[in-house]
Image (cartoon, rainbow, N blue to C red; front, side):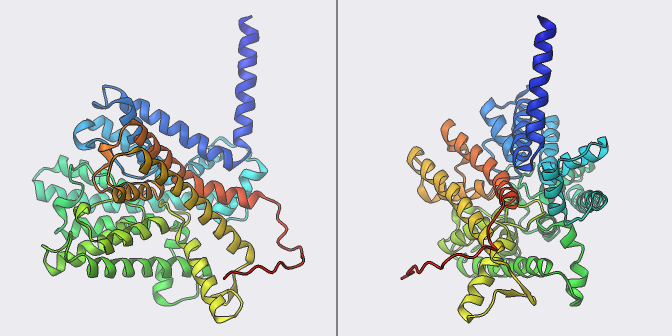
Length: 450
């Protein structure tokens, strides 16, 4: 009987494994779920700190989904071992489960399924298995070079400020990983507010966020972009959109916050923190100012930046800069009455349709999350809206109400963070795997839009 049970169990596990591994649409949420649950169980252990299970699970999901929302002060509620576990969870979430699982496949010498390899080629912009290996090597090299550089600068600065080398190493290592992975966690109770006048710390974290939010294959072409050399349309769109959002965000926050969170700062500190919050709002979640004092203009600017997010292939969340740019370019060309052209290349109808589908699905989940929070939580509506957008965009910015959520509210935010991290990628993988009829012709339907 025991042998029959063991054989049945093994067959069931193998079948489940094969079904999951067939497609990234399945492997992505399953592996993220397992990692979140495992992390929650580890952080709940007494050897990691003093958290209830729901708070440990919340922290784990926030770390794996590189969000940074927190219901507990991780600098006090987690000991050094728990903080190390959280850092590993952040690193795993930042690199991306598909990247890690692809590495495992390649290291074990196993053959990828056709669907999986197709999506892996699409993700890494590769034509062959060897190119996937090269892209994976680039991702890891790019990640750890930037994180190590950030670690050296931050560790030296913290060591100098606190006259404690071990403290500097601890803070620098955690903040470098959290910054590059756009996680928003810091081992300081007030996040980065105590250092909002320190340009070394603020700018180092800011540039870690920016380069972490851009795909390595795009980021390494930055020198060519600065020299004005010819690049792919995708690279141009990513760089131009990123710079535009950073500049627009900084300017609007500057213009609208002199009566709010930035009014007591010097001009240089005001500019520094306006820039940093513009950077951080695009899925990083670090705070250098008290967000509860935001003016209405800054409030809506941060919400807009959180929804747009970073760029595809990076550690950031949101609908992505390319999706946003495709809609802007399409609207612009439509107003001019010409073909949908970007950098002498035509954007296909298929790409536009996928961008619209992604945004619709993303906003639908966000609206549902907002509706549930607004009807179940007795907290200010504007702060609940901000919290939901932050969770969906895997940002981590908060107006101070995360710890005030009840158990049901925490579960809703957990689900929103999880969906915000895996859902956009799942949608794209799903749309790429569908057989479409974009090239078939049908009689046109006349529909009035006014």
